[in-house]
Amino acid sequence: MQFGLFGSATARRPTGAEPAEFDSSEGFRDFIDYNVEAEGLGFRSTFVVEHHFTGYGQVSATINLLTWLGARTTTLRLGTAVIVLPWHNPVLLAEQAATLDLLSGGRLDFGVGKGYRYNEFVGFRVPMDEADARFDECLGVIVKSWTSNEKFSHRGKYWQFDEVVVEPPTAQQPHPPIWMGAGGESSVRQVAERGHNLLLGQYASPADVGRSIAAYKSAVEASGRRFDPLQIGVTRAFFVADSAAEKEAALERRLANRVRQLKLATRPDGTVHGGPDRATGNPDVVNRNSAMYGNPDEIAEKLDELHRAGVGYVLINGGGSGGGQRGRASMRRFATEVMPHFGDDAPARKPARGNAQQAAE
Image (cartoon, rainbow, N blue to C red; front, side, top):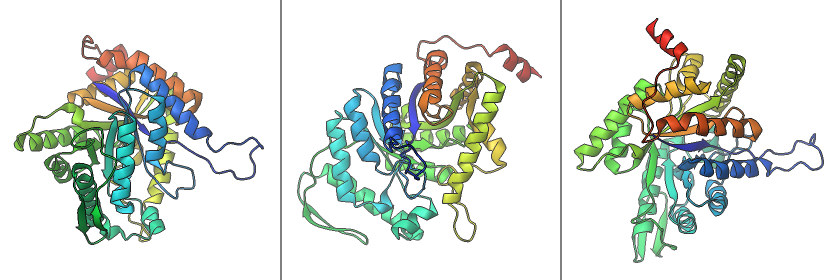
């Protein structure tokens, strides 16, 4: 298995109660340092969200943040997960993404999506029912911008361009890998049929993840292409805990954060759209089944379950506090106490004694 990171940074807005030396950039700088260390620990990639109007400082300018990170790293792949295409001018976005790909030496993983948070569509005054059409048109223009060496014009429903040649070219040819999030079997198959890589969300059960992988693999092979497990990134929340109490506290924080995020996706009629990661059922059960929280053996058991489901590429999210010393320590322990058991030359793991007894019972 290979491992990357998934997540966000936080740039808090001052409220007036902070000390004079308060620095809104602190969360961004901590995120950069966290990722620089992750590269040294053997992580393959980092994928960063795009969100707006949250009130708590999630990343909004994803390409900008990744460009700064690209200057501080040499091998870490730089992923967007995801840039929401209905809100972006496709030519301007193609130029910005290509610039990052060039400056980083071809390390961009271009993750795109349609968006799902109601408050963001309202803020941009973009009707949610236009999301699919805007996404398709925007992505088509971006790919053409990256692959056309001649001037072209575009007359679409949402964007029009006259005799443009988009600069600069990308480092990766014909263009950076395109990643799309999906959940249901039909949408997973559509991602495969488009020839794109797949991002699976962090709340789906291992059984659902396995079904999605099987559907994607089947569609890839039906198109005559070779399936590679690294074409699918599976996000999982993680936290290496020293005690049961610490694990429970981390699970409670994660559940509270999930509730806060779902409120941003709630429409006036009460309908909640959780995006491609629409895990249903009791929120606490979903939380516990999907999170890799606990001691290294417990986390390894969770990874074993994913590996048996066909997962080859895991994007870990969290670390307990979203950053700071606790998050850094958790990532180090994951890299040194868990990851070595899942390398290509790692010996087969034996279940921890307590877990094996529980399984037998």
